[in-house]
Amino acid sequence: MVESPSPFVVGGHLALDLLNTVAAPRGEPVEFLFSGAALLDWLVAAGALHTDEVGSLARRLSPSALDAIRRETVALREWLRPIVQRSASRRRASLSAAELRHLNELLARDVRVVEVVPSGRGYATRTVRRSASAVAGLRAPVVAAIADLFTMADFALVRTCAGPSCTLWFLDRTKGHRRRWCAMELCGNRAKVDAHRQRVRRG
Image (tube, rainbow, N blue to C red):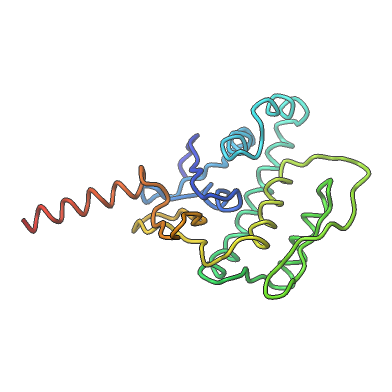
């Protein structure tokens, strides 16, 4: 893996941006969550953490504790990936009973305890209780985003970029739901250049 300080924040949803923290923009996989500091940088870039919180967290957490949270976040990402892969293009998420139980165990660590339950043809969240001890975890916004993705998103709009070698995911929030690219400045413009070259060759 090649280290990089510039993760892609193009998913339109924090849970999908988590999947995009490992990507292959040039064919070789790049791991963006390569350190605890990189995790903090990504949380800020993705809008899950305010810049002024970083200093406080860095002082309160030892490097080893922060790296442990990073490892847990990477494990959460890889737990999420097959669920999104098999649910994409469907109308609802597809979770096994064990996956649903694991998600609710993660949610139970948050200050505001919620759980995901089956609801009609999909899923919904309900508040179970509020914890007396407010221990703010760095993963809390990410876990909450995953619950939101499973309960709110139409998985028919969860897609991968149409770029032939791109691995990035996104939630298509466009009005006509015709988004094809992770970002125009990345794969979109590349596709336009390739199409132009082909037209010139055909002459």
